[in-house]
Length: 470
Image 1 (cartoon, rainbow, N blue to C red):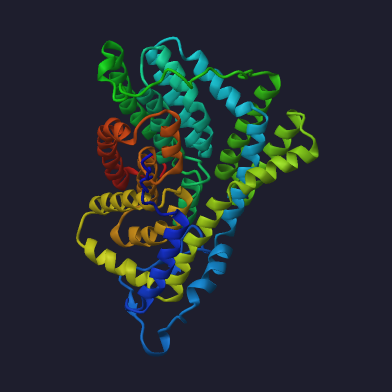
Image 2 (image 1 turned 135 degrees about the vertical axis):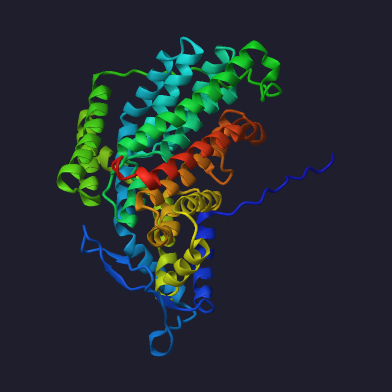
């Protein structure tokens, strides 16, 4: 019998990549000229500072510093410490989401909604686009969608569509919801925190943008679905066997308890949005709201104190990787700051953009964020890697801070639906038996249309952002 060999595919873990960036940051401190800007307090928040344009000066002699070779290791603890508010948020939200999922409320609501939408193709497509985008827009859902992929594939096959349509109505709105999120604690909250703009500000504008992107997505998915219904041979997965492995779910009961839990969950979200607008609530209050929702949900679900505790700890432990990525990503800024070169980098990039319109700078930020997402698919990790540079760069190039945040969101979110370094994307494709090449052929043209509209929105936000609540 001939020996078989397994072809290895090259990949790199996000934490390994970020650790490499930490080392690179220290090496840069030895070659990049040290310098700094003068800073002054923000008018609306004296506790935070902003750079003064035209104030950059090189540092030399006694004002310069040389980092010891092991400094990057010491800085990791400082990075974890500086990122503690977001790290704790990730742990607490992860634990509460686990309680909500343990109750069956989230899965039952999603499955029941999809079941009721399955009467005709356009209703199923439009309904799923709306449901899944709102899940990502609000609390950054993504992992929760993966178990639903086989179910939606089953429904699409029964309606003479294919698995590509199923992926399209789950993963396309996932990416759009992340890109336009108004209150997602894993991306926009972090980015707005770094950019020093009010949390959840501009949520209404982002929601309108999301509707526009969803309209493009609906046209793209529906047109393909109708083509497959008319001629199954045109399916991008016509060669894949779907005769087995796709069964309907058994427990989709949306009983009184689960409805009550969902009600508490959405009331909690509304409470936090109200608190941020009326009382200036921040991350500690967001943690408190989520904890309150978790406690009430566990009580309604009839969980014992021990069961709720174990579920919460399990959910929080599953967020360890994301939390560590945040701390390590924050370390990059720590090393650059300790080496006194972060202002030099901002000054250098600003020099390249000097004289260019703010609109061009905003588009350049989108390009940087999009490329970064290929290597750091974690939204929270990417925010800490790029926003400490993009936020002061926005000040120097005349780009509003909200536009810088929006460029981060667009760059992070849209490519989430296709980036090959994302375990979620590749896992969902595997569950749906959709080859990655087939998915790229479907999603690639859609992304081109989406990015074209994204550029329009960025340019408009540079000029009219304040008028729209940015």
